[in-house]
Length: 319
Length: 282
Image (cartoon, rainbow over all chains, first blue to last red):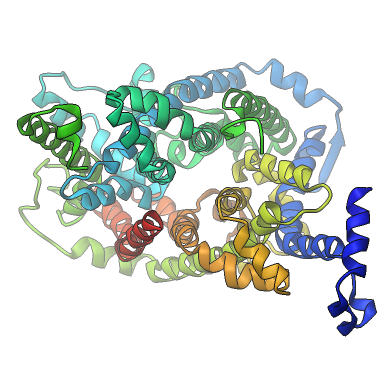
């Protein structure tokens, strides 16, 4: 109500308004709405057609038995029933859960640590930053190849390196209890530089004065981390947690494909890999869509939990 | 920064110890990080017989692997396809995402928060999850096995919008409010004020987008089938399957795929560091 009143006052008040033809006098509010619509149009349209529509289409597909291409048969909840009775799917979910629960915290701590390290004024810092970011330049396909070469049980350099520390040769990718950790090692190596940069950007946002004031008050580095860095870094932490969790659930396909192909004994067959196999190896498009839909549901719940835990990355409740 | 010693009461010696310790940590971590890449580069110059000899440098240095890879498979075409794909996606995405982010961060309109919530929630719908329906939709649009089908679906993702919106929320409102009072349209505010201010984050995003799309694997794998459209990652992967244990050839192929990225990054890196510095100074 009051906003309409002020709009009217504004429209009536300035004599300069007479210079403009009356039909162009859309209220400022409405011009803002139209501008917003136009600014949002390209991405809105693209996201609708290539992201949101496929998502809903995936849900629709999950109720069909799709044979080859073109023939769809409605089977209701058949695919979901099958999912709940599919031990291979649950084993892949278990592998995914282990992968997320170990990889996400390790990656978070490592990249935050690197971000803090890079914030120090040390000689050669720019070189270290470049070096640490370098793995992210590779594709996961290439990263998988390089590590497969190094992890080779007989000829790989990994066993030569651990051998120098007196550790007996390991079957890095051949031992079902070890292979997932090898995949996690490669993931952290690959991703840490990227999230280091994100954390560094967040750390640079925090005003220096806070640390100086804390130092004058005699606060230890640990106290200033807990009282200044940690709370003020919340938006960044929120972002990193969401991104790494989503990446851990869905982004592992390329790496698993080229590093272990899901083996040994399905020990690294994460859910995404299993879904890909169902769709593009066995042609089970409907069933794979049901699995994908279920996975998205889990990610929505997880993200909601993270959102609540970090208070949406805001500093406080107010805007 | 140099006044640590005074306020915390540390002696110069412990300060040096701390700095020296951190420097060593930095060097060690850098070496660990770089080792697999350097190891692959070094090994790609070894022969078939010595590629797994475990020596740091090749005894019998050879270019043969690279010559072999380029003559056996159309590597130049793969690289060109990857470049076209990554470049087009990057430019289009930065343009569209900054527009959307500006509207979401700065303009007031009904439903803004719901629209942002919807866009934000699409972050969870990552490409692999919708691979199957996307494949069928793109086929329905008649874009399968074409540059359009390869490129257009990959332009749109919420990641850039989200990051840019967070950035725009931090820009002081006074700048654009003054401009709007002066009679500037929203497009001019976006083009003349918001875009120049976001140059640091746009350049950083450009690097990430270009990389991410140069490194695309799953979508090109399922959406293209003709050899003219094969991108580098798919090419390398099929090459690996074909050449099994010939690590000398596989590593040479991997190194060729990686060299343009590393070069580009080393050029871009200076720009990124500069932009980070200037944004830190203001």
